[in-house]
Image (tube, rainbow, N blue to C red):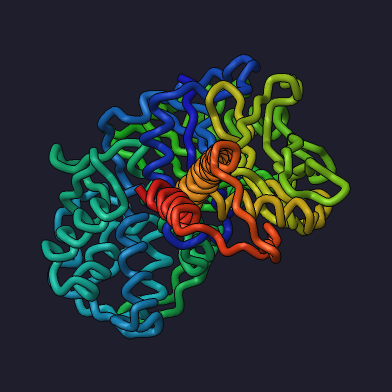
Length: 514
């Protein structure tokens, strides 16, 4: 029976726009996973179908046959009045428009239908018709509203079915405006929760359906009417007296046919806890005092008390808590930063649930992107997020922010920039070219030195050989007498010596540039 649901917080008195669409997704998800933290024993109820939605935590806290087809009876009027109020807000009708009942005022009604006696030709404001429909559950008032808003009853019923589809209802079909018995007129508790949530989004709707007693002024065909709400939870002047009065309740609508049983869609708020409850297939029973009781009211109170008495808000994630520590590159004086929640996570949980029952999922954006977290970082920078779970149900996701600032180290930054520059393909190619040219230059220098040494040795050897040859020649040559011999250092070099040195020099450069 326990199911979970993921949808946004819905205030009972002023539900936010699109709540029904979000709620539709939540209820679909809720049918797949168990509600966490429900360690308490479930309450026992007698009604055939029930759905208790905790609109603070986004959880379905009780579900019984919520997706099975049921007859909605007069809870159908929630959709009828919703369409009228949406037409008023869209400027297509005025709340004080005077509406005259046509010949179809009693269309589809039986002799025992719930009415306030509106007759053909009777005129009253659209606002008063809405009060007749919701407070006194007047079936004929719904027909008058339908003809005024939709042009005809059949066209209005088509509008009802279209709106139900827009709200995400998958098990609903309307055949009339008021819930009179019809095999082709049905819904589910899950679907009607979507419709009720959309209706409760409108302040005018909640004002009307939460009115315990209202006086309808006299009309052209009737004296004034005093109407008491059929919802015993919100009034003490009706046929049920004060037996089921529940001070925390607000609206929405009762219903009864022999096929649908006793039905009730209502809301309740206490200590900031806002709930929506739907009960169908209720039956009368005999109380301890011998009076007749009704399980739709009794079961609804049982479900509300189940939450109000056993659940409370708790801060399960604090803004002062360090969730994780992340390494920081290029930091000056710090190489890590602590992350804290940007806002607290407060959840409505059972009183017997301990903090250890909650788990956390942490996402660091830089790690998710596959990059390194680098300085500078300013305190308060959003660097990730954390989600809190229990048994697979999310209780909230909040941003993780830096608890302190980390200044940038300019030296570390410079090194990183150099490393980044050197890693560029163009730079790598340039460095490779420079290295190749350097190696070529080095090779040429070494080759030059080697050849130069060879050249020096060759020249020296040639000179030594020449000198030996000259000495040998002088040794065996006849003496020459001359009164003034030419000093050796002044003698001109021989042609053979000049040729040898020139050839040696030429050979060296020729060899070098081979």
